[in-house]
Image 1 (cartoon, helix red, strand yellow):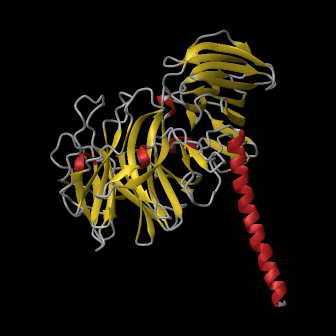
Image 2 (cartoon, rainbow, N blue to C red):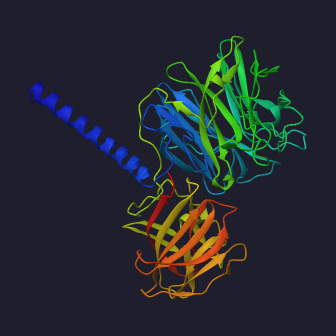
Image 3 (tube, rainbow, N blue to C red):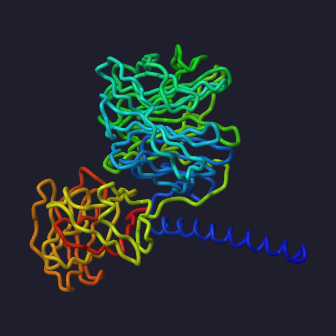
Length: 521
């Protein structure tokens, strides 16, 4: 083959690979756009928070050259997103821990020794004998995985009744010494591999004392995130409590010339905080400070949308500047509700589509699926086949996906052909169920019937719809997916923005064409 023919072939192959990747990105972004999900990038050189909407609290960010990675905990594992401009994000990994591990709290994503490391506090794990949380670490060459088995760091539990051992935060010195902080200002030294504690926890930081007249939930010193700049180590922590009053949470900063203190609090604290109930974002806090590719500095953290705490903690981004005396501050006193200049970097396409046609045999990354549930599910060929279990919606088989809009609408087609099975869709535990012959609306917590039963005409198949307009709920059923019959009104959402597909009893249910759509721009 001549050289010019070979060059042409290589160019063609590269073009095809690039086209395929671009098509996948475009398809994902277009689907997110068609679902009317909130998108931070305004398309005019500016962005508007949140950068990731919905329930994405306790963010942990690490940058590797031009690539940014954000990690968030999920009940039995974690999810990782990737970006090159800090505003447009793509989900690249949802990792589930082995059976027996669940209730993972705030994680810490790090990169050292040519590997990603993710530290996590786990409330329940096999062989648990300690008080509070266990701390584990997993590692991988690539953020997409595969990830290693979890290793117990084996932090000795101190004689402290307040000990919980949550929110690990890692730091490494230029000499290679490794330390891990947890909440309440405790630190332990780690071995060279960073996977075992080699000291007992030492209390080295008491936090920053906020004004007495501030309305907060508690001191709740947690979320230690550390980095080094010039001669100082910086400790970024959360205080005030993650719930409670709208003004509860905050991010505070301290620094030291040693990785274990003594720590001096910033005279400019707090870095971020909700000061008034009328602000757009409540419970702002739990931040990470990092340097971007171009040398600028930023903080990524979480906050709850005013009046919609049930939606969860969304991920927010603000620029940071440095004072002449070496302290980080939010640049120009900007607010998370402001329209902000878009950071530099490549747009990788944004978002995670929530709708699912069930054509893939691999569950969509948007679904939350527990260990005990997976064996009762079969995805593929346009169907989700679910084996019913238990005697109620709480005991039965179910999967959930979190809404990202304050107002939204979901529809799904449900086919039940067993009179001993009930299945349907719910928001939290309020929703519609059918046994294949009739549909009813039921309300938690007793799962009691509220409205008349509506007959099913098409051999067990029924279309279901839930509409949530600013937390006012309406429920609908249809024989054809076009003409809808309303029932189950009179309910306002107060607990959950988790959308649930469920089945209980002892039969098999088929779900098809799950669609999600935001209702307001």
